[in-house]
Image (cartoon, rainbow, N blue to C red; front, side, top):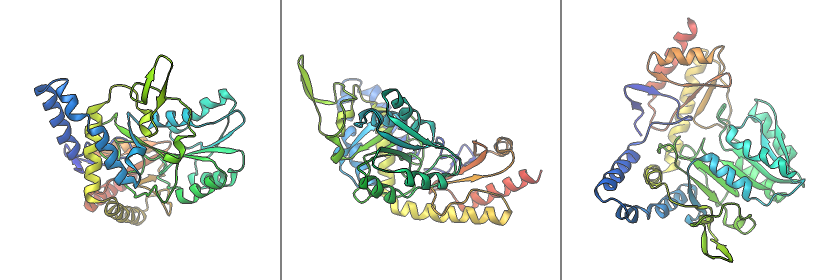
Length: 363
């Protein structure tokens, strides 16, 4: 994934990242074939990438390919999860109030059905997570949380949360888009019911591509919420039989362009190895924090966080605008200035970033 794009320094991977080279090449090949071969041959040639994508994601997440299906985006998967879980009137759902809206709105909708959705308020994600843990009890039937908070990069302890949810038979739904591709996870060791992820951030795929993991032990408990021609084993005028794998969440015509792009991106990550990528990312995170401390630039510091550091400066929007004039791209969010990077980021670019930030703040 090239760190420099159009001679700019890019530090907004938590938003939409530049397209990685592997995805770019795959997209070009697909479009060339679309023109040369035309339908139906191009569809016949590339439909196998639906399965190939599941196989690459299974390597990345340490799960079974039958537990993975493609998506358009993270929000779509969270909507599917909220509608498929067997939640009833008076059941309790817990979610942090500082989550990205995509992980709040689907759960709020359940209030219309009498589900008690408790949104834990506050901007301090560490404190919010501790409160969430303390609130889990016999009435809790689902917990939804981001693995890496979009506000400050805070990484909740998923292993601890998973054990607690299992103790109370509560379902765990994870928004993984803020950390998948930047941090390692083993879903055979850390049990979750759903993990959803768009491909446009740390994976470097095209926008409008993503995937969803559905724990095979959860499949039989789910409601028939998303039924289309590709989600069934068979059907007739009397009814249908849903697939017993994550493919039950397929619907109609596949977004083959997005699937091909995401497959190439995940395969590129697997070729390097997510543990090696995580090691590089942790070293860059430590370097960035050290540079910020040395320059006296305030930021939210967590012992565990993803590839995002939130600067607590007075006017984040003005800072971002000034950096943009130097072809440095960051992003102001909720009163902080977000810096997010990837494993291909160079330390000398981090030093230039911090130098420019210090210069802007001194003005």
